[in-house]
Image (cartoon, rainbow, N blue to C red; front, side, top):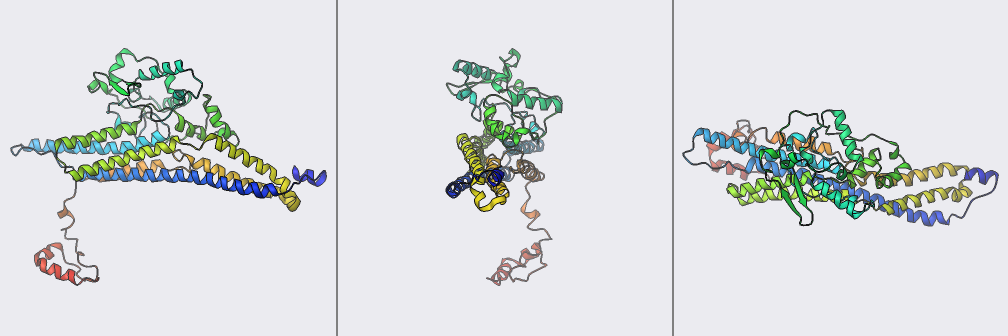
Length: 468
């Protein structure tokens, strides 16, 4: 339009001073915005590397370095066999919780509240629930939604008397699972339930917010605290939201505005926003760290592990807890909304002013030049928005399913597939004929048994001839 009017009606060009001054400043600001988003993305990747490291360290130490419970010398063979089986069950249960920590952390970061997923339910369904506070901030408690304080207190009381999510009935079919997920997204969890039925009190916990203490029901540790369920149709472990209109610019600018007013915004951007700002009533990864800590405490009480082993277990657990805290910080600390909107507005104004400044020198090339500039500036802004929260389902997000399934689960299953190998099984096997073959020793084809027969002097003489 500017080109047509300037060419046939009136010259609309202005001085290019704004192009030089504002363009330089805007370039630096956009560069800072993109760098900040990439730092969040990179930090999220580092924390997930720490989760993988902590899982490997924790599981390896448990499986290889935790001994059996000592038995009296007069114990029967049956008692020894049962004690060994009990130790294996304990170790495998603890290692399953390590896998469950990674899987629940994945769902927790995506805002998928519940344990009824194919990759999580069978790992944690038997665990009692801790009455921990919500893992992420809620607009209801902050009063940002305009709710009167009396109503917020009433909602809090309803939340305290709500039955545990973990013990609620699972979805009966995949379609019902999708409806449950949509219902959780559309309605705040505080308003979804009423008072606890009398027959479910043994399955609930309440939280005294003022005192900061958890009130457990008398039967919390009894068999009634865990509901026995048959086979259930569970939600898939990978359940990305569908692409919608609000994922397209400029409609994506209204996602946060509508979400703060209680609207359910469809699409991937709306799902990410709900994951970041929605209320999660159960911090399942944090709960699992408490059970893993109880396992370490049990080993301390039995006095069957030495201090270095216990310190290694505690260090691995602290690594998992630290990663959880860091990932929560990334998730709940977005780029300020006013800063983001102002940057988009200034960029739009700058691009809109480009044709007035470019026409005098570029004439008809003003149109493709403006389009190219818009592509560059808006491309960086969109890239920054995409990687700001790297825990979703987008192609630009971290592949959390690869971390939990292809790395942690596969490695833990391989670790527990056989007992700790004895050194005689691999160091003194007849196939180990290259013990002293490297570094110029030239002693190939000699088995370990033959080296042992030659004595230590022959071994040391060969080592002395090694290349330095």
